[in-house]
Length: 119
Image 1 (tube, rainbow, N blue to C red):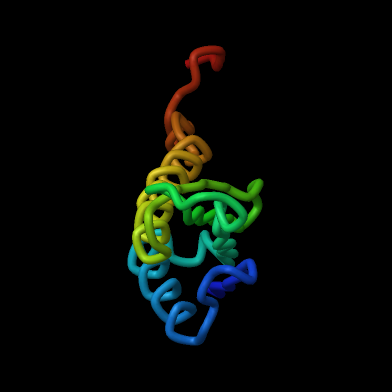
Image 2: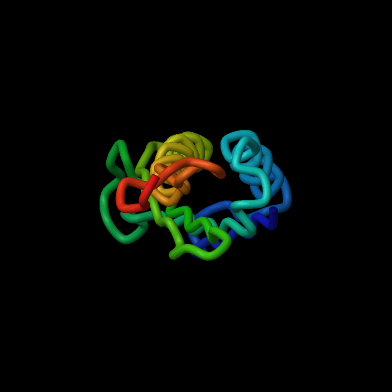
């Protein structure tokens, strides 16, 4: 899985932050294996132009799933590490929900008699 980090000029986008992001995202989405091909993260300081507030850093995560539409979540927190962790938790739940909805269910078993078939 490829993990990409995009930041605005007011957020730390150094190599250490990218490594932290990659570790947190891969830990959260590891169980989905090859279903997730790429995750893009966008970190932004939502109040860089105004007075500081408690939840000023927003992390947006977009997961690309094989054969399905992308899944996007957002989380705001006081710092980038908290925003990443919160968004990763939301993304894990959202991806699980999407994949569960697209699981093949109620397919007839081989050799099973369907209701409209003569016996």
